[in-house]
Image (cartoon, rainbow, N blue to C red; front, side, top):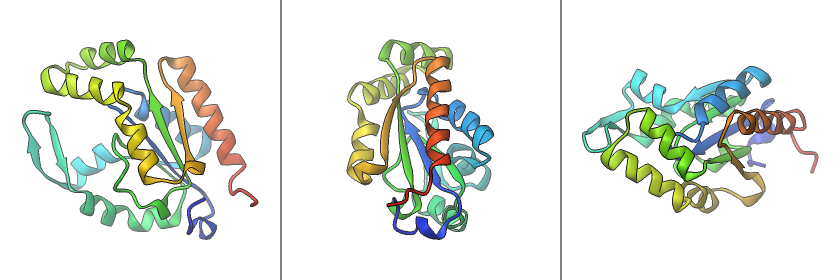
Length: 177
């Protein structure tokens, strides 16, 4: 449990994973089931200009992690948030009560990303990221093992099961120990 979580009435959850693993779908369904606030970091970065420009090779904004953290500080201290982003190591441990890493079979992921129109470096970098479990390793290096879970996210049945699992965790929060 995060050190400051006893001050919060509702938990904060990070849902992370490679692009295309179902973070936004899972986070949206979880927010609806739990009445927690869904914060999509990509949308927040675009809406509030929390970036340092555009990366032409990867076709995305270059996120300014300090600006993102400054923007989120108060809402994360309050609690009751589901943060949805494909990175995790810059979010302070004290903010988070659960870190969920979604993982998808490489063939499924390749098809999902191709359907989104990803190609070249953006496609290959994301497939390699999943093959080498970069996000899982990043989460393991950044957060305590007792708040970290990896969940399979290959299809709608997996997403439904994941939402049910996390919703049950929310119902039992905070832990009594």
